[in-house]
Image (tube, rainbow, N blue to C red; front, side, top):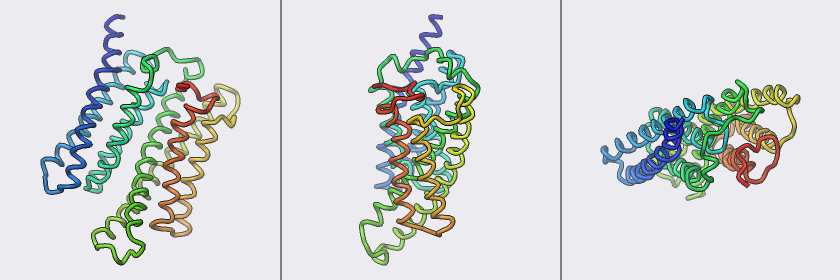
Length: 288
Protein backbone atom coordinates (compact mmCIF):
# COMPACT_ATOMS: atom_id res chain seq x y z
CA UNK A 1 0.00 0.00 0.00
CA UNK A 2 2.87 2.36 0.86
CA UNK A 3 4.62 1.47 -2.42
CA UNK A 4 1.41 2.12 -4.35
CA UNK A 5 0.99 5.51 -2.70
CA UNK A 6 4.61 6.46 -3.36
CA UNK A 7 4.42 5.60 -7.03
CA UNK A 8 1.09 7.39 -7.31
CA UNK A 9 2.71 10.46 -5.79
CA UNK A 10 5.60 10.16 -8.24
CA UNK A 11 3.15 10.00 -11.13
CA UNK A 12 1.41 13.11 -9.87
CA UNK A 13 4.43 15.29 -9.11
CA UNK A 14 7.70 14.01 -10.54
CA UNK A 15 6.35 13.26 -14.01
CA UNK A 16 4.44 16.51 -14.32
CA UNK A 17 7.52 18.52 -13.30
CA UNK A 18 9.55 16.76 -15.97
CA UNK A 19 6.79 17.31 -18.52
CA UNK A 20 6.65 21.00 -17.64
CA UNK A 21 10.39 21.50 -18.09
CA UNK A 22 10.47 19.48 -21.30
CA UNK A 23 7.57 21.41 -22.82
CA UNK A 24 9.15 24.72 -21.82
CA UNK A 25 12.38 23.83 -23.62
CA UNK A 26 10.48 22.36 -26.56
CA UNK A 27 8.46 25.55 -26.95
CA UNK A 28 11.69 27.56 -27.10
CA UNK A 29 13.06 25.19 -29.74
CA UNK A 30 9.94 25.56 -31.86
CA UNK A 31 10.14 29.33 -31.79
CA UNK A 32 13.83 29.23 -32.70
CA UNK A 33 13.11 26.80 -35.54
CA UNK A 34 10.48 29.20 -36.94
CA UNK A 35 13.00 32.04 -36.86
CA UNK A 36 15.89 29.93 -38.17
CA UNK A 37 14.34 27.11 -40.25
CA UNK A 38 17.70 25.91 -41.60
CA UNK A 39 18.93 24.81 -38.16
CA UNK A 40 18.13 21.12 -38.53
CA UNK A 41 19.38 20.16 -35.08
CA UNK A 42 16.85 22.55 -33.50
CA UNK A 43 14.09 20.91 -35.52
CA UNK A 44 15.25 17.52 -34.25
CA UNK A 45 15.15 18.81 -30.68
CA UNK A 46 11.53 19.90 -31.24
CA UNK A 47 10.64 16.40 -32.37
CA UNK A 48 12.46 14.76 -29.46
CA UNK A 49 10.82 17.12 -26.96
CA UNK A 50 7.31 16.30 -28.20
CA UNK A 51 7.98 12.55 -28.20
CA UNK A 52 9.56 12.63 -24.72
CA UNK A 53 6.75 14.76 -23.25
CA UNK A 54 4.14 12.49 -24.78
CA UNK A 55 5.91 9.42 -23.39
CA UNK A 56 6.00 10.94 -19.90
CA UNK A 57 2.30 11.77 -20.07
CA UNK A 58 1.55 8.23 -21.20
CA UNK A 59 3.65 6.85 -18.31
CA UNK A 60 1.86 9.10 -15.83
CA UNK A 61 -1.58 8.03 -17.02
CA UNK A 62 -0.58 4.37 -17.21
CA UNK A 63 0.70 4.39 -13.62
CA UNK A 64 -2.47 6.05 -12.37
CA UNK A 65 -4.54 3.48 -14.28
CA UNK A 66 -2.54 0.56 -12.87
CA UNK A 67 -2.69 1.64 -9.23
CA UNK A 68 -6.24 3.05 -9.22
CA UNK A 69 -7.74 0.16 -11.18
CA UNK A 70 -9.76 2.34 -13.56
CA UNK A 71 -9.10 4.45 -16.64
CA UNK A 72 -7.70 7.77 -15.31
CA UNK A 73 -10.42 10.19 -16.43
CA UNK A 74 -12.37 10.55 -13.21
CA UNK A 75 -11.45 14.15 -12.29
CA UNK A 76 -10.33 17.42 -13.85
CA UNK A 77 -6.63 16.81 -13.23
CA UNK A 78 -6.62 13.47 -15.02
CA UNK A 79 -8.65 14.84 -17.91
CA UNK A 80 -6.17 17.72 -18.31
CA UNK A 81 -3.30 15.24 -18.52
CA UNK A 82 -5.20 13.19 -21.07
CA UNK A 83 -6.03 16.32 -23.10
CA UNK A 84 -2.33 17.25 -23.11
CA UNK A 85 -1.46 13.75 -24.32
CA UNK A 86 -4.10 13.93 -27.07
CA UNK A 87 -2.85 17.33 -28.23
CA UNK A 88 0.76 16.15 -28.45
CA UNK A 89 -0.28 12.85 -30.04
CA UNK A 90 -2.24 14.77 -32.69
CA UNK A 91 0.71 17.13 -33.18
CA UNK A 92 3.03 14.22 -33.98
CA UNK A 93 0.87 13.01 -36.85
CA UNK A 94 0.05 16.46 -38.22
CA UNK A 95 3.72 17.39 -38.30
CA UNK A 96 4.53 14.19 -40.17
CA UNK A 97 1.76 14.97 -42.64
CA UNK A 98 2.45 18.67 -43.13
CA UNK A 99 6.20 18.83 -42.55
CA UNK A 100 5.97 22.21 -40.81
CA UNK A 101 6.99 23.38 -37.35
CA UNK A 102 4.32 26.07 -37.36
CA UNK A 103 1.74 23.78 -35.75
CA UNK A 104 4.03 22.93 -32.85
CA UNK A 105 4.88 26.59 -32.30
CA UNK A 106 1.14 27.19 -31.81
CA UNK A 107 0.20 24.06 -29.90
CA UNK A 108 3.11 23.43 -27.52
CA UNK A 109 2.52 26.71 -25.59
CA UNK A 110 -1.08 25.59 -25.01
CA UNK A 111 0.05 22.20 -23.72
CA UNK A 112 2.50 24.01 -21.44
CA UNK A 113 -0.30 26.18 -20.05
CA UNK A 114 -2.45 23.10 -19.48
CA UNK A 115 0.22 21.20 -17.55
CA UNK A 116 1.00 24.38 -15.55
CA UNK A 117 -2.66 24.79 -14.63
CA UNK A 118 -3.00 21.11 -13.73
CA UNK A 119 0.11 20.89 -11.57
CA UNK A 120 0.30 24.37 -10.01
CA UNK A 121 -3.24 25.79 -9.90
CA UNK A 122 -5.36 22.79 -9.02
CA UNK A 123 -5.25 21.88 -5.32
CA UNK A 124 -3.28 18.78 -4.33
CA UNK A 125 -6.41 16.93 -3.29
CA UNK A 126 -7.67 17.09 -6.88
CA UNK A 127 -4.41 15.65 -8.19
CA UNK A 128 -4.78 12.43 -6.21
CA UNK A 129 -6.46 9.28 -7.44
CA UNK A 130 -9.62 8.56 -5.47
CA UNK A 131 -12.38 5.93 -5.61
CA UNK A 132 -14.94 6.49 -8.34
CA UNK A 133 -18.29 7.93 -7.37
CA UNK A 134 -21.16 5.51 -8.17
CA UNK A 135 -22.23 7.36 -11.33
CA UNK A 136 -18.73 6.91 -12.82
CA UNK A 137 -18.48 3.19 -12.10
CA UNK A 138 -19.39 2.19 -15.62
CA UNK A 139 -17.70 0.83 -18.73
CA UNK A 140 -18.99 3.94 -20.50
CA UNK A 141 -16.40 6.06 -18.66
CA UNK A 142 -13.59 5.23 -21.08
CA UNK A 143 -15.78 5.39 -24.19
CA UNK A 144 -17.56 8.68 -23.48
CA UNK A 145 -14.82 10.74 -21.85
CA UNK A 146 -11.96 9.60 -24.09
CA UNK A 147 -13.99 10.36 -27.23
CA UNK A 148 -14.94 13.81 -25.94
CA UNK A 149 -11.41 14.79 -24.94
CA UNK A 150 -9.84 13.49 -28.15
CA UNK A 151 -12.44 15.49 -30.08
CA UNK A 152 -11.55 18.57 -28.02
CA UNK A 153 -7.87 18.09 -28.90
CA UNK A 154 -8.45 17.82 -32.65
CA UNK A 155 -11.00 20.63 -32.71
CA UNK A 156 -8.66 22.90 -30.73
CA UNK A 157 -5.86 22.21 -33.21
CA UNK A 158 -8.12 22.83 -36.22
CA UNK A 159 -9.45 26.04 -34.70
CA UNK A 160 -5.92 27.24 -33.95
CA UNK A 161 -5.03 26.82 -37.61
CA UNK A 162 -8.05 28.92 -38.54
CA UNK A 163 -7.04 31.60 -36.04
CA UNK A 164 -3.58 31.71 -37.60
CA UNK A 165 -5.16 32.01 -41.05
CA UNK A 166 -7.21 34.98 -39.87
CA UNK A 167 -4.15 36.61 -38.33
CA UNK A 168 -2.20 36.28 -41.57
CA UNK A 169 -4.99 37.54 -43.81
CA UNK A 170 -5.54 40.61 -41.61
CA UNK A 171 -2.03 41.88 -42.37
CA UNK A 172 -3.29 43.05 -45.75
CA UNK A 173 -6.74 43.58 -47.21
CA UNK A 174 -5.48 42.80 -50.69
CA UNK A 175 -4.53 39.12 -51.12
CA UNK A 176 -2.62 39.93 -54.30
CA UNK A 177 -0.16 41.94 -52.23
CA UNK A 178 0.89 38.80 -50.38
CA UNK A 179 4.05 37.04 -51.35
CA UNK A 180 3.46 33.77 -53.18
CA UNK A 181 4.78 31.79 -50.20
CA UNK A 182 2.33 33.44 -47.81
CA UNK A 183 -0.59 32.80 -50.16
CA UNK A 184 0.38 29.14 -50.31
CA UNK A 185 0.69 29.03 -46.52
CA UNK A 186 -2.83 30.46 -46.12
CA UNK A 187 -4.24 27.89 -48.53
CA UNK A 188 -2.48 25.11 -46.61
CA UNK A 189 -3.76 26.41 -43.28
CA UNK A 190 -7.29 26.43 -44.67
CA UNK A 191 -6.94 22.83 -45.88
CA UNK A 192 -5.26 21.57 -42.68
CA UNK A 193 -7.89 23.24 -40.52
CA UNK A 194 -10.70 21.68 -42.55
CA UNK A 195 -9.20 18.19 -42.39
CA UNK A 196 -8.45 18.41 -38.66
CA UNK A 197 -11.92 19.65 -37.75
CA UNK A 198 -13.37 17.03 -40.07
CA UNK A 199 -11.50 14.40 -38.02
CA UNK A 200 -12.57 15.77 -34.64
CA UNK A 201 -16.26 16.24 -35.40
CA UNK A 202 -17.12 12.50 -35.67
CA UNK A 203 -15.35 11.88 -32.35
CA UNK A 204 -17.42 14.67 -30.78
CA UNK A 205 -20.59 13.12 -32.19
CA UNK A 206 -19.70 9.66 -30.91
CA UNK A 207 -18.80 11.09 -27.50
CA UNK A 208 -22.13 12.90 -27.16
CA UNK A 209 -24.10 9.82 -28.20
CA UNK A 210 -22.15 7.62 -25.79
CA UNK A 211 -22.75 10.18 -23.05
CA UNK A 212 -26.49 10.09 -23.71
CA UNK A 213 -26.59 6.30 -23.46
CA UNK A 214 -24.54 6.42 -20.25
CA UNK A 215 -26.76 9.16 -18.80
CA UNK A 216 -29.86 7.03 -19.42
CA UNK A 217 -28.16 4.11 -17.69
CA UNK A 218 -27.02 6.19 -14.71
CA UNK A 219 -29.78 8.78 -14.28
CA UNK A 220 -32.71 7.43 -16.30
CA UNK A 221 -32.66 10.18 -18.93
CA UNK A 222 -30.76 10.58 -22.19
CA UNK A 223 -30.63 14.38 -21.91
CA UNK A 224 -31.02 16.65 -18.88
CA UNK A 225 -29.93 20.06 -20.20
CA UNK A 226 -27.09 19.99 -17.73
CA UNK A 227 -24.62 22.92 -18.38
CA UNK A 228 -22.02 20.49 -19.75
CA UNK A 229 -24.57 18.85 -22.03
CA UNK A 230 -25.84 22.21 -23.23
CA UNK A 231 -22.37 23.48 -24.10
CA UNK A 232 -21.48 20.17 -25.76
CA UNK A 233 -24.53 20.66 -27.99
CA UNK A 234 -23.48 24.26 -28.73
CA UNK A 235 -19.98 23.02 -29.62
CA UNK A 236 -21.47 20.40 -31.93
CA UNK A 237 -23.69 22.99 -33.64
CA UNK A 238 -20.80 25.42 -34.18
CA UNK A 239 -18.57 22.86 -35.85
CA UNK A 240 -21.51 21.35 -37.73
CA UNK A 241 -22.09 24.84 -39.13
CA UNK A 242 -18.42 25.04 -40.12
CA UNK A 243 -18.57 21.74 -42.00
CA UNK A 244 -21.93 22.61 -43.54
CA UNK A 245 -20.50 25.87 -44.87
CA UNK A 246 -17.50 24.06 -46.29
CA UNK A 247 -19.40 21.20 -47.88
CA UNK A 248 -22.62 22.82 -49.15
CA UNK A 249 -21.71 26.50 -49.51
CA UNK A 250 -18.15 25.85 -50.72
CA UNK A 251 -16.84 28.46 -48.30
CA UNK A 252 -13.08 28.77 -48.04
CA UNK A 253 -10.63 31.08 -46.35
CA UNK A 254 -11.78 33.70 -43.89
CA UNK A 255 -15.52 32.95 -43.67
CA UNK A 256 -15.29 29.38 -42.33
CA UNK A 257 -12.19 30.36 -40.33
CA UNK A 258 -14.32 32.83 -38.35
CA UNK A 259 -16.74 30.03 -37.47
CA UNK A 260 -13.82 27.84 -36.38
CA UNK A 261 -12.40 30.72 -34.32
CA UNK A 262 -15.73 30.91 -32.50
CA UNK A 263 -15.50 27.15 -32.02
CA UNK A 264 -12.12 27.56 -30.31
CA UNK A 265 -13.75 29.68 -27.60
CA UNK A 266 -16.79 27.42 -27.31
CA UNK A 267 -14.66 24.28 -26.86
CA UNK A 268 -12.81 25.81 -23.93
CA UNK A 269 -16.05 26.99 -22.33
CA UNK A 270 -17.53 23.52 -22.74
CA UNK A 271 -14.48 21.73 -21.38
CA UNK A 272 -13.13 24.05 -18.70
CA UNK A 273 -15.51 26.98 -18.23
CA UNK A 274 -18.39 24.81 -17.07
CA UNK A 275 -16.16 23.41 -14.32
CA UNK A 276 -15.69 26.92 -12.96
CA UNK A 277 -19.18 28.32 -13.43
CA UNK A 278 -21.63 25.51 -13.97
CA UNK A 279 -23.36 23.41 -11.36
CA UNK A 280 -24.93 20.20 -12.54
CA UNK A 281 -24.45 16.50 -13.08
CA UNK A 282 -20.98 16.96 -14.62
CA UNK A 283 -19.28 18.67 -11.68
CA UNK A 284 -16.87 15.99 -10.55
CA UNK A 285 -13.98 18.23 -11.60
CA UNK A 286 -15.41 21.48 -10.23
CA UNK A 287 -12.93 23.56 -8.25
CA UNK A 288 -15.09 26.48 -7.20
